[in-house]
Length: 360
Ligand SMILES: Cc1ncc(COP(=O)(O)O)c(C=O)c1O
Image (cartoon, rainbow, N blue to C red):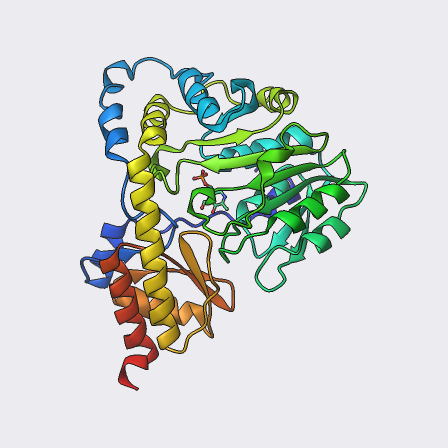
């Protein structure tokens, strides 16, 4: 029987959660709340929903492989040229594409741990080596990451804000990091949660777009724009860098419904503002309530909160029985997505019940 190379066997397949209806049937519960995947609880932009109806009569046609109108809308919004934008089937695809384009088997990529697991998978998938640098105080340790670069390093992945900790890196430390990065290395700055950031000290990656060092900034319509199901992400970089990635990009990698919805969502600034407000208010409520229970949490710049806990698997399972779905994160923490007010309340009530805190 044919078998994949060892480096592919080194990847654990992603285990998707069961459909929520199936889970409820098994547990004999209803009305569960899903706070596990950092989706926007407000839902998609109504403008996006309206726009996609106009696509359906044309579904017999291939999508626009160049994503002309979406790239045009993005370039106007971002003040860059359309040649400086690449679209992906989620930003996830662009992480893979970056590794496939710029690395070969045996090359190294530097990344933080814990961080977004797809960096490891993308690098492992082409036979590369992931050099994992521990977070410091739950944040990327950019000085240690610069130190970890060797002549074999091709890519450094930085999640800003980081998933799962929700922490960010600021201007000065990022500038110092960029000074140290050799010109032969691509810096991938994954800004999936960019629109949620409220700290004015947040690193400005865009200012490096036209400088000598090579940088790929990744953003997505899956988070604040509420379109995770349509799989549209984008990258911003120098056009030479993107034309290399386009050599390996699938010709029709983003679908027509996603492109249309993304254009509408991009101009629906009310929806974005509402989503940010719901997130900020939910964050304040959760900080207060989690703190009042005497439990630890890491302040977040994203739409989820990282909670260091003992026995995260047991906590996850106990909350699940009460219809609250969160994410266990390794042996020492859980991650909870900030939901709608009622969902956050359900989470806190369940947390009180399972930790016994409500009875103290
Ligand atoms: C840090 C980070 N990057 C990228 C992604 C992938 O997003 P997309 O849906 O655009 O593929 C996620 C999704 O959870 C994420 O947390």
